[in-house]
Image: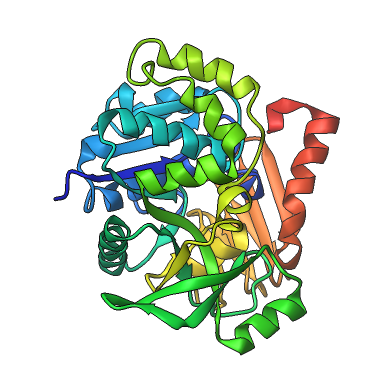
Length: 363
């Protein structure tokens, strides 16, 4: 295994669209949401142990989840958990990880990935990541993984690639032409028809010196904040420095801050059974269904004239459902959610309304 390979797993989100199962105190990445015996972050960590030494895997998260991470990933040390004092999107957390890794290995090749994605074809995924890491080790590229779209989904970002430029060692790697964030349905349909658009997986690979140069060029104000901490990373002074740095750090994504601006961005077209598991509908897509196309968690659920539903009930709860078609029905602790699948994007608004009217105890 290549000791220059590092991984940064981003695990600070609260998964509001998976409410009420995902709560601020226990977000979806820490839940066994597929019923496999592993939480999403445990599955993600195990996948990356196949390409990086365990000690080279870092978890970036909100400080309130540190103990939860150490409990679920006993194979790592506290030094591998990077605690953000506040959520500032993906660019600051990557800048933090850059300087942390640079103190250990300035020649690092780095893969950055969310903690809560589903990968159904794990062997394919391992092969893709290894190929991508090899490619970025030899080239000054910012590489992202693109997924061939299977439907005109408006919940994903899209990457347009240039088919005239191909990397000889891996013909799946193409130069990126444009990024588009969550298009309207008609535009998504035209993307699918054109054949040169991919879903943006949010998984990135690069050489450490290349991404640090990109920060200096495109996000200098973010980079300079973390540069001031040189000499404090991997020491007892690190956390105090980070707590102060984040107070002056802007909220910005790596996509908007760097990937959409840089001219050395490439995409590796991949197929490994990917879902970003961003919504209940995406979970419905990957779960097994019964003869009525319902996916049911809960041992005491009876359905009548009910189809195409995702149903999540506690083990000891008897639920009788009649006459539902294409609904989300979820009960968790003291909350019951019943929502049409087609309206699931409103769940984030439901959460905001509940917080405003009922307080934080339901969030």
